Length: 244
Image (cartoon, rainbow, N blue to C red):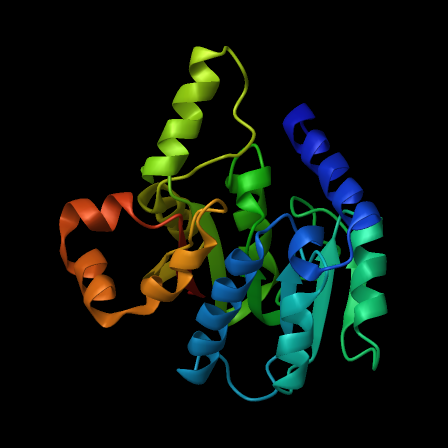
């Protein structure tokens, strides 16, 4: 584990020690987690997983997606390297519908082909690079298994402004950004064929009131069809990949 990754592990441990709500334990805004959950439920509604498919939430934080998948009838495991986060996840999962395991994304404690699906949301931004985690995701997926991988958009206007500010102040960037094309190439090299890319739109923390606008059809059409807007507006992308 690199120094950058150890810093993030320490942050996640502090989040879970200091906060109760799921979004704060995982380092999100309330709107950020809410909109991600809505996007994930839409994928499930569209047939992302067969009934009863065994799933792994990689970097489970407070276990939000573990509980959602368990309610949908999936045997699910939540893995995180933050023990305080795992304790929060277990406390929130009162019926103990999921299983929780301590571990690192770069060395998953599971045999090859253990899962039909792996979610990797909010993980790559805290990794030095995507290669190790994506290698492990490809290994633990069974043939034709599905991965949902999030990468922060490096071209988003607010993200670019933050990176420029850090550069001018001679400060390190706190988050890792990876272009979706780069992440897709790494996924393909690990046997994960990208089949879909979703734009994740989130309101700035300082402007939570605009969340309602982000679901309007005309705005979604503009983001998906206008090249410049499509590149600059999303805060993140989700890439759905299928194991060859």
